[in-house]
Image (cartoon, rainbow, N blue to C red):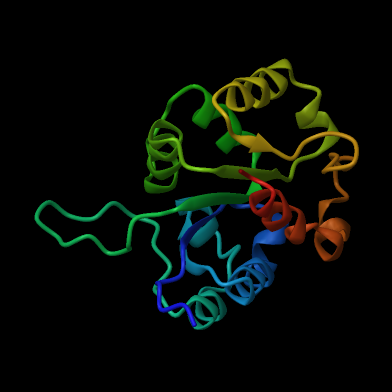
Length: 183
């Protein structure tokens, strides 16, 4: 019988329709043996995209969205891996550009620098996907080792105005499967 502590997974949640169901990801991750720490973007918390009580109950930890204060003790154990889901176009572009103006972006930028396994599962429309910056950002993140689940067989964008209808079919499991497949 193993007595080692479970590995720590940081789940970064952005302000997109599926964020309301992010408890599915947290529950699945804990079922796979992860100790989950949830970090939400300010837009996800301020816009009430997330179900904070459900996420806190599923993870056993407070949802974080702000930097800790100077001198404040570290609030979460160090991450062993990171999943960003749902990842918005705003987040992918800022992250790829090295902009860390929120706690969530700071965490993912640092995760790349630390060489942690990072999986990103997008959620945006075909109109946003058509913008050239989006593909440059995805390519940049992939070049840094981030496993971006974007493209046929992984995740594909939806037509504008139809995102709510895709919430129920958002493939949370693909993020964990990709993480499990990481060497």
